[in-house]
Length: 581
Image (tube, rainbow, N blue to C red; front, side, top):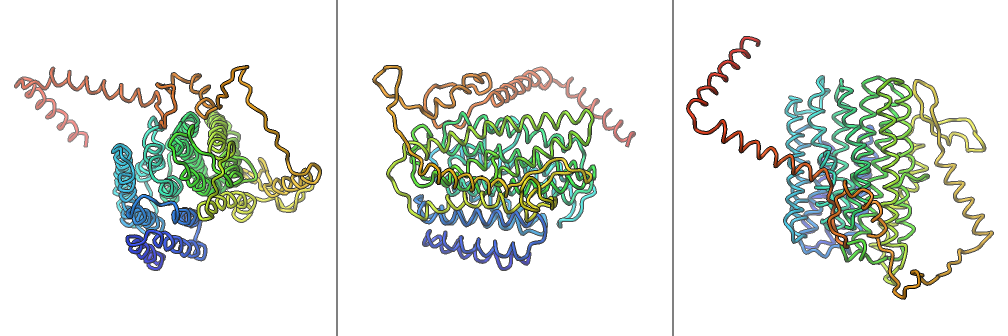
């Protein structure tokens, strides 16, 4: 609460200024975010402080970009700042009521912003429907907790109920993986999409972790269910993202994939906490933090880059110059490649899963191995997804258009952050490091995974970055600047030079998995995805509707005989319940 007293007024002032001058509003929001970032670092009080550090970093980058990006009229800027204000309240709340107030403050302005900037009514209504469903479940969990303050919870029920509310906000409700988040986040302005996907979904992670820390007993079955939902989201989020044609939709599905990985890490934290495996508990918690950094910062840069496009379809995207290196670094981090922070987080997640399978050494171990295999397949699809994105938006066929520094620097800075954090942050917060020199590595540069004081694996991000720099310098000195030779396209003797489109790149997967993906039209459309799960939900809903009609006509048909039977049966049930009670 004390933090709110001197960090929220700057955001309120920013909102007022933004009504009259949107650029001034964005500049003041950037300054307000810097103040909150400094405060969060100075008043660091545990792992939950990292979420404020991550969020404010995103808001700074997005606000700088917004200064020249916002061409949506006068109301986008105050709605953008009001959404950030809600998230700031969530992060600094000291009780359930203030938390819920911040949760609604961040949701409602986002709904209005999406509604004001799109012609179709569906995206804002979809966003609001799932946003309020999330709020209802979180509210139910808080009511069950039967307290207004964040006290320790003897029962796991508040955690179980609230968690499903939080994961809906993260875009990971099973069998709805291709629905609300890509539709809502994919249609918002890019600066709004950045804070929605990078920080609003992060509030769900923050909520789960906060309630988990307070919960004394967590059922293993619930944790395994959460792990299954996360693994499901990783694979299908990456799959639908790869075949998607909407530029922002691709990144929104990538958000689902990343949040799925964070959810798996959270489930491992819950299991290790319940089983009292301290070392894996620490490693799982660090994995959540590293993944949150990797996803939020990188997704900010990627969504900002999507704002440079004039078309929704990636097939018709224009290729932007001067940000190729930045997008490549962001994509490599999201693909789980070292030495970026995303690579460290991916490695730790897989190490945790395989450690659990080894430590438990029973039938349940198979679940951890299967989850690891699903994550590996999802990471492969995620890599293809991101290669497809950066290839068709930046790398090949660059335009001559030069970006302004205000638009370019936030994207490049986000790329630099994920790279630097990869070989610095693990050494600052990771508890297990090797102090001996191994194979010429620097002392204390190897981070280890371990269980019961037994080493399981190790890796050195610092060693990798030093090798990359060394080999790059040697290659440049030996061969000089790379030479590029251009050749005309040969199309089997046909004169027409057809371009290899983004749609064609993903069409092989589309055709191989057409019974799951259900592609309906073979043309370039900015689709958000159509999947077999949603189709079967429609069939289930129609079946329930038909059953209701038959039941109503047969049994609830204004017959006095049936009403007498209902009354007698109800009386019998009430008597049984009273007697047994």
